[in-house]
Image 1 (cartoon, rainbow, N blue to C red):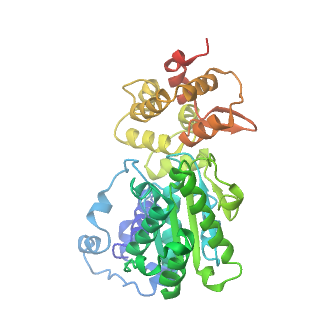
Image 2: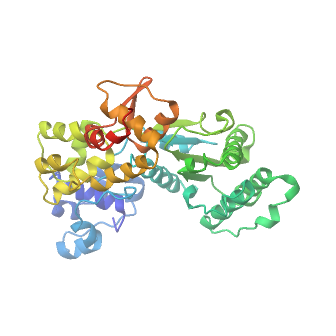
Length: 410
């Protein structure tokens, strides 16, 4: 087992659920455990632990002390690989199947803090286990200088890919002014990367919507990605490139959607956790609740992944469910930072604040301008019901009803 995170976390989970014991786990060959069935190809090389070894020494050899003693994780950023507190989505097996196909394109859409990056991480990890080259790049890492023109952005893009693949960035060798930036970038990826790799390359791009507001870059960059995807249909070399893109909004600005990757490939839209998924997450936190208690929590925060995980983490620290719910919309509650960030964003955009005030004060679903729908959806504040919208959860309705009162139409 060594320090393999999946095996370690799976083992701990089974011990916590009392489906096996530490003694049984340590004294049995790994390939005899059904819980490790997904890892059979690797277990033939795993050492058999001698029953004569003292449990303490075996524990040190097979389960790191930090992992054995680790409690619930504070939900910050993406959920790390091997975490007990990750909830697998039903779409994931299909994502893993798709990324193995020539010329694959997966596009993940969801508001902030709904799990886009966590899913992307697992797709990339799966591809890595298949022996593929992988590059993850968050476009928000591009600095102002790189965003000053399409040419500079594509040079930055190629340099980042090369660095992550540990290859020299021979940009000047492939960049000729008369050929144009898109042609130069395409030639670089084809000749300098794909031609020299002996396996498929997965390029995973996170937060791509940050360039939607830059028309020149957005149109050129996304039309190029679409071109690469189309090339895979007729050119064998381009079959080696697999794309994963993640974004939080459908407000594409002036981007021509038909010359972009946003209407092809496998669409993945991440929603909220179901009650069953929340119950599973509670089990991982070693919490035993009645269905009525789960309903109480979800009546306030819905199935919002971040809000659910933060609640369970704080309850594991000793906070009661009653206190959590009583203080949820106050400045002393656990959601204060989360809610305040949304408040600051709305306060900086009065028209958006006015639109959301209409949503939280309405007694039924209402219609908004498409621009406001896109922005509020990307923030995670609303859900759609047909052509209308409602607050994503009661927490948002209660918190913003009063605070957005100054933006009410007079």
